[in-house]
Length: 132
Image (tube, rainbow, N blue to C red; front, side, top):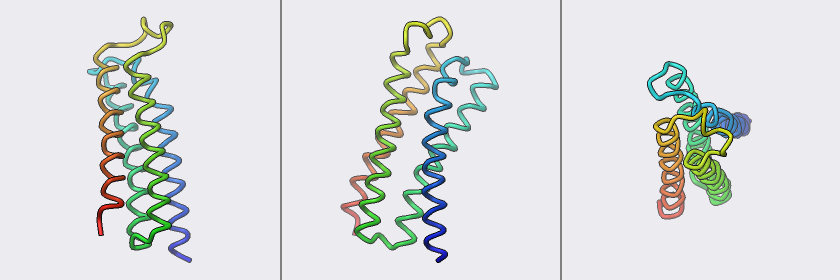
């Protein structure tokens, strides 16, 4: 029973992390990288990434890497890849109406963060099925 509750909590954490990444990234573009607001929003972005990857790690560890859990983790990682690629593309090419309110360095930092998340998701997909 505890394993089921732990798995449900990790799924909730995963969804919370996705929501944090999707909601905070556009707000991050409007702040200069040296403002306290940018730092606070960046902390929330990192917390979202920790929640997402934590859900993958917890479900994998709790069920000792069983094949159905590997498939679930694969779906989680694909979701992380899609969201982080979306964040990176949105940050590199913001809509024309937002150009006046965005800062170039903030856009680049946010896009690089999204790229690193996408690369980490790809790395963990490879590790998921090659690790014994």
